Image (cartoon, rainbow, N blue to C red):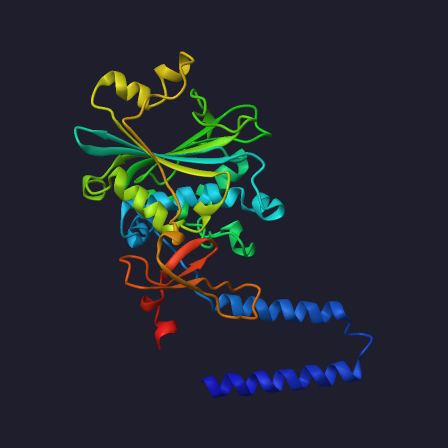
Length: 342
């Protein structure tokens, strides 16, 4: 059957070329376009469309590619860093200090809510809605210095939390927009005007808060303030050397109804008292390579995109083996990357 179709296609092509040679003026380009369109329609009719009967179930399963809750939190912190990366690259400095807060809120020793706050540019309403409506269409993939590539990060919460709440304020919007999406919902309501102001906004009032609410006990039991600080310093090590960048991890107990109301941003902010008090507040810091004894080794590499910094130490330092960074984020230790050790 395949041979017959090929023979038929060849005969048709031969006849078409013959007609074109005999009647070049009569068979115009429009006729050729019609033939091409007909051919494309036949080819399309033979294709099978992909159907996903339950996209929410698919997203929830894919989200489990994350190995820990701390890695999910990093996705939302990464968005804040990317939002002002163009500004930093143009000026080699931030126009105003970039502040990111990771707040861990626990009840009776169990992690219940994680909030990532920043004082960046915020998102327009259209962009906020597009993030959740269009999965896998990241606008960052065409910008080489931005980290996001797959357009899935905003849905990372699905692995570990019941609900995602996004509050954001852009300079072109009149008020803070709030959007809520639950893990098992197949649809979500449009963003509405938020009843709460942003706790840590920029000088012009812009910024974003991402809240993961209803943390699963299996995911939240081992995420402590110390672990979150360690993960941030591990992953964003090179970025933390920048002047004007501050990432803080804070911890708060919400065991009482009064403290829970303050944690949600209600009483303290409405009364003009600012942010609610935290039980712990730790600023993340970059590793101090000068603290390692040894001699610097800088190989001569003729490549503007590649920078190599090595130190030959007198003894082994735990956790400080040679490693690879991309866009300021740690990828892995060289010894664990197959392309380097082969």
